[in-house]
Length: 577
Image (cartoon, rainbow, N blue to C red):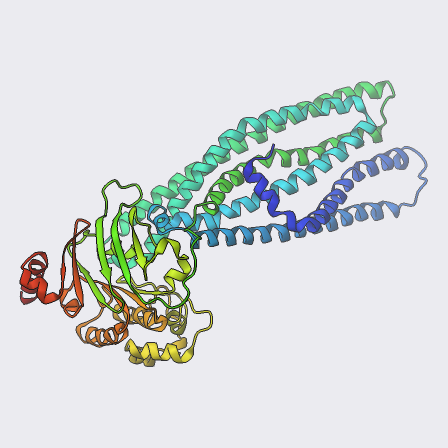
C-alpha cells in the first residue's frame, strides 16, 4: 500500500506518462534479452557439439552481438528517459520548496537553521530522486528480468525451478529485517547532515569573527564532531545493508548446490541434456543479479522515504496569510495601534502590552528605550511580519489583517541596521523587487544616498557585482545602498531601524540630509539608539518592557525629566567622556 508521500511522488510523474511508457518498453526489451543468452547456449550445446552442425557458424557471432546490441540500446534508452523524468521532478520539488520557503512567516526562520533549509533543498531532495530512479528502474527492469528467466527455467525444468524459487521468500525476509533499521538510521543521518551543513555555512559567513577571536580550534571541533557522527551513521547503514550480501550468497550457494545434485540424478535417468543443464545453470546464475538488485533497493528506498518526509514537511509548512484585499491606491500613511499586545510564538511573556498609538500622515515618530523594550517588535507588526496577539493595527482606518500582504508591504520601505545585499549588480540591488527597473530613478536614488563617489570607484559603475552580501563595499557604503533602495521604492511609509548606524560622522551627516529630504510627506517610524539622530522627530515614544512609558517631542520629554531625560543624560555623559 502506498504511503501518502509515495502517492504525492507518483502524482508528480503524471505529466511524463509518455516518457515513462517508453522507458518501460525499453526495460521490457532489456528483460527479454536476458533469457535469450541461455537459450542460445542450449541450442549451441545440443546442436553444435553433440552431432552434425546444421547451421552456419557465422550465425553465432551475429546472434550474440545482436543480443548484446539490442540490450545495450534498450538499456541506454531506459536510463536516458528515466534521467529525463527524474531531473524534471528534481527541479519541480526544488521549485516548490523554494516557493514555500519564500512564503513562510518570519517565525519559521527563528526556529529553523539556515543549514537545515539548505540541506533539505540541496541534499534531501536528491535522495528522493535517487530513490525514484534506482528503485523504479531496479524494480521494473529486475522484476521483468526475473519473470523472463523464471519462465525459461520453468520451461526447461519445473522441478529444478521449484528449488530456485526457495530464494525468493528467504530474500524477502532478509530485506524486511533490515528495512526498519535502515529507515531509522537514514532519518537520523539526515538530521546530522543538516547540522554539518549549518556548521559549514556559519563558518563561511563568520570568518572575521573566527579569526579575530581565535575560534579556529572550536570550529574544527564542531565540524569534526558532526562529521564523525555522520561517518558513524554511514558505517551503521553500510553494516546493516552489507550484511544482506553474504546472507544472500549463502542462500544462493545452497540453492545452486542442490540444483546441481538434482540435475545429476536427472541426467542419469536421461531427463536432462548437457545443453539443457548448462542453459539452466546459466539462467539461474543470471537470475542472481536482478534478485540482488531487488534486495538492494531497500537502501535507497529507505533513504528516499526519510528524505521525502522532510521535503514534504517543508513544502506543507503553513505559509503567511494569503487573504485580504489590495489597497485601492497609494496609502496616506495614517497608522493607529489600538490596544495592541503581542507575544512571540512559544513565549508566555508578552513582548508588547496594550499599545495605543496614533500616527498622522507624514509624521515622524521615533521609538527609543533600553534594549529589549519592544521597539523592533512594535515596528515589525506593521508590515505583517507577525500578527498582534490582541488589539488591532489600522492603516488609513483599515485593519491591516484585512489588507493583502503584498499590497500592505508595497506601501512600506525599510532600512535596517542589518543590511542585506545580494550578489548582483549595484543597480539591481537599488531597484530590488522592481520587475522593470527605471535607470533614471536608480541614478537619482544613488545620488540622493550619496553613492556617486562609490559608483565612480567601482570598475563597472552601477553594473558592478557587489559579491556575497555586498562584500566589495565597506559597512557605510552598504548602508547607503540600502538607503538608496528605500529612496528608489518611494513608499508612503518608511521604517528606519538605526539606518545610519554604520556610517562615519561625515557620511552620516550627508545621508541624514538625504533621509530628511526623503522623509518629507511620508510617515516615518524611526528606531534609534543614538538620541542625537531623532531630536527633530515630531514625536518620540519611550518603550520599556513592552509598554509606552512616555511620549512627546524632544524638548517636552527633557522638560518632563523622566525616562527619556535619563537616557539623554546618560548618552551625553558618555559622549563627553
